Amino acid sequence: MNIVIVKPAGDYYFRADSTLNHKFLDYYCPEAVASLQVTPVLYTRISKTAKCVAERFAKRYFDSFAFGCLIDDATAGITPAMAVSLDGTCVMGMDFRPVDDLPRGSFSLRSGGHVLFQTDKAPDASRFASSIVAVSSRSMMRLGDILALELTPASPIERGETVTLCNCGTEHSFKIF
Image (spheres, rainbow, N blue to C red):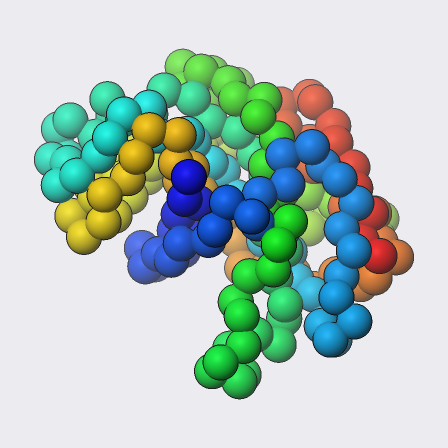
């Protein structure tokens, strides 16, 4: 299984399945990582193999969505050989909702008592479709792969903070150590 992260500008990259934290387990940050950041994402599970998908067919490749976040080393990229993602840093529960429920969604991401992201606005399902078209034009997506759309730029977080995700009324929390 791959996790495809799509940035707001449309570029994307892959994360290994070892980065998936679907049980909202506490995150133990490696000592070598000086600072962290968190990014809210809306994600879907690919429902069938996708390769060179045309725009008009893209909605056939997903049928549900959920809300999660990515944790990243805030200093990654400064040194070109440094890893971009760390194990256990794609925090995505498996509480998917049907795409038909998109208009009724409310999502929030809080950390250290601060709201980092909040919306009651309906996510745009067409962004999932256009991302499937773009990714499948260069890379095959398989059944069970996860496509995650970054919603806003990353926000800094500190060790010791508790991160709370609210996905349409369901709340999950985990601590950063």
